[in-house]
Length: 161
Ligand code: PNS
Image (tube, rainbow, N blue to C red; front, side, top):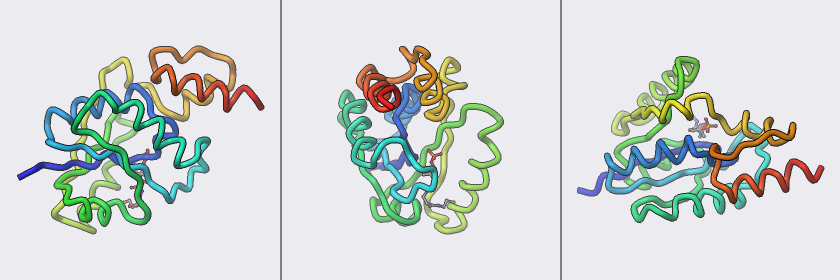
């Protein structure tokens, strides 16, 4: 049986912290689908297409990882893709409350899909897409936190304003 996992998120944009989680997941599952939520209430900086392109370029190195996007509920998408698990990264205790709520609600909606948490390398534990955007906006250096092509797009988008 092929074990498929969904790694959902906003990925606005994908960071090296996300990639670290993906790498860990590739060792546990046969196939990982990086799934970008379409109904994001967070007013993303990048369009869905841009986020998908950045993620696709970043995951190119793994044969068993692909990128997709989904409308509606995550558990419905996971069931449609025949996934057995949802993977989420857990950086710090501050992530826990929201993640716990989401995992239990998703389990309530579909008991067949398990949520598993993976901890990224400690050097990424304080990293988030939101903080990366703020640093770029304010002129700081984000080398080592995002793939170089993502860094260039961030600079283009945020410093051309
Ligand atoms: O990267 P994020 O913003 O932390 O990801 C959050 C995401 C996209 C995983 C979450 O908002 C989600 O699952 N959205 C899809 C809609 C859904 O299923 N909502 C109910 C969650 S209990």
